[in-house]
Amino acid sequence: MKDSSFTDKLALLGGSKTINRPFKRYNPIGVEEVAAATKVVESGILSKFLGCWDTDFYGGPKVQEFERACESYFGVKHAITVNSWTSGLIAAVGAIGIEPGDEVIVSPWTMCASATAILHWNAIPVFADIEPETFNLDPKSVEANISPYTKAIIVPDIFGHPADMDSLMEIATRYDLKVISDTAQAPGAYYKDKYAGTIAHVGGYSLNYHKHIHTGEGGIIVTNDDDIAERLQLIRNHAEAVVGDKGTKNLVNMIGYNFRLGEIECAIGIEQLKKLKSLVTTRQRAAERLSEGLQGLEGLQTPIVKPGCTHAYYVYSMVLDVDRLGVSRDKIYSALVAEGVEGLTPGYANLHLLPMYQKKIAYGSQGFPWTSDICRRDINYNKGICPIAEELHEKKYLGYEMCLHDLSNDDLDLILSAFYKVWENLELLR
Ligand SMILES: *Cc1c(COP(=O)(O)O)cnc(C)c1O
Image (tube, rainbow, N blue to C red):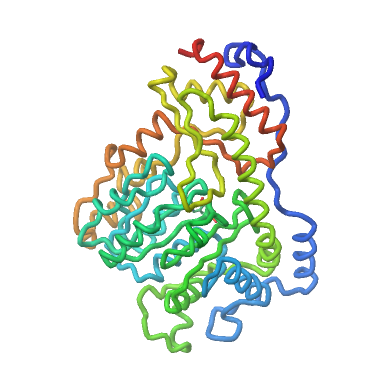
């Protein structure tokens, strides 16, 4: 795979770029989705939801069909569609009965909505540190962050690799906590013999256009718990107007929203779901080609796949041994970007460092909920609370967003050539 570009001058230092053409944008939408969406448009029924206790409370034919298809695909008792996975996370936190001031442990390495879903119910996000291998919540740090007020854990399966569910569910059982899986980035990944997202009390997937399968915007919530499923459906569709006629006894968090997904999206979702397995396999083959090619590079750790797990590769995650390399991550990142590699990210979220948490300004200007009586202790969001996440973000982590492009072998080999060229010239970056 090595070629003459090896000896070329780095683009960062004025040489020519390794990659001079754009890669094809990822687009899993095909003729099947066009036909399915067209049929719905022709039917004239673009949604059928009614926000009252009625047979249409559960939505129209495509909503029903997509939800039943998701249940059989993911092997769960209930699948509930929503207009985004952000909505799904909010509904999930409400449905498990979180009270104002309850603490919910979450990872700093996730999309911001995993943590704001907690704040939406006036509950308090508490950030635990991550494992350096998978970037998922470290069960030891989760346990160390449990307080008398902890009620739940939100567990992302970040970048496509499932979190350590056995350990996390064991901790949850021991402390009587509920677990919500945020599997937006890992649909179709396996944890042992189950799909990621289906092991927690509630889990789910995003259908936004960056994700493996999509409907433009949308989300799927999954659960095996009948009671949680009912409450999710109520929160999705104006709970407060429905509970009376429906005879719902438990009124906790029955503040409803309009989180309903449309018929067109669900018709597209039905077709997308049929393609999920092959889309994930394609991504895995591409990642394997990258890992084989990058294996020999000094000081570069390719993504790790833990025994019993499969990786869905939303992001191809690398860690640099910067001490050994004697070059900063940011320099290597800049050199690779200059070679034309698109989709690299130096570091990741570190949510606890967002201004909202640093300044504790969320609802209004007075520091609610942290300054309110409902918050029963001082919550620490200072730099230093998640040392592994912070060091990876600042110095060592380099992500490659595989979700952006439909990568051919030629594309992958060009990416490899860019890495080889940079590694061959490390001395010049020192
Ligand atoms: C995409 C994503 C979400 C949010 O999903 P939307 O459907 O865009 O609302 C939440 N969590 C993670 C980890 C994500 O990647």
